[in-house]
Image: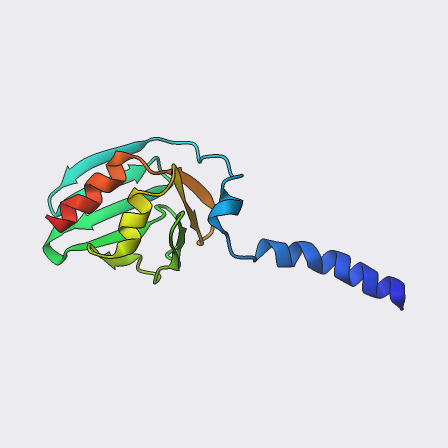
Length: 138
């Protein structure tokens, strides 16, 4: 009976570790996701993309930002910065004045994105994302 319990605990431990919330400190050990930021003006605002992994889209008429993982099913994403952490609604839509956007733009070197079908991403906080955020505010 004791052996069966030990086997159960050994099997259950890794599964529990996988669902633990991601912290900024733990995310420091993640390698930065492969890619580069790009920025482009669009008909309704602008968009900053980190390769094909992450998109921050400014919809200037509604003064909202949409954060999405292109090519993945729509899902609630969790954003973790050095000063803030929040799970977004599945739409990924935020007011342009949301403080989480500032936390992403000014996070110490990186911010983390988890949720959806893909692995957690560590993305550098470069000026392209901040530029798209500012577009929505002005």
